[in-house]
Image (cartoon, rainbow, N blue to C red; front, side, top):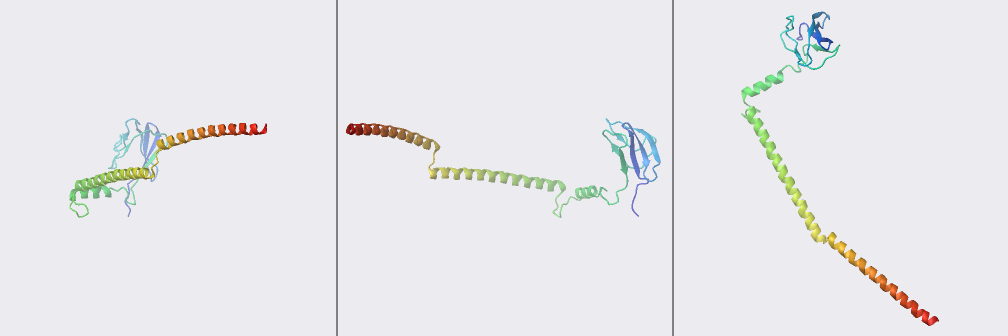
Length: 184
């Protein structure tokens, strides 16, 4: 037979400052007009009228008329404290994975390994950056390309071009003068 809360309970808000407890099986009211303060929240059980099913539920935050919460046994076993019990056993036994490590020691070992791997990664990244910089320097040295030097060469070639253009203009004028002497 499946475990169950007897009775399963619904918390139904009548307005933002009061709620009622309802038997979810037959919708009968267990207790009515229970005060609620959104600012400080509320512990539902035991109620002001003395109803106490043996477990505790707390509510907090703003509620509105018609908001409801159902309290019933979890049939599938989710959230039944098994993880908490296993964690407690792990803490008390002091052994993780048969390595005779306590939980604290295993956590410290884990954090140490993460720290070592992080430092190794940072060192490898710095080495890769340095290697890339060295390769770039070697490439620049071998190709012999210097932007400043190339700009100076372009400027010098432009001056030569302009000087040659003037020489060609002078030669054209001279040739025109010589041809006009023979013609005329």
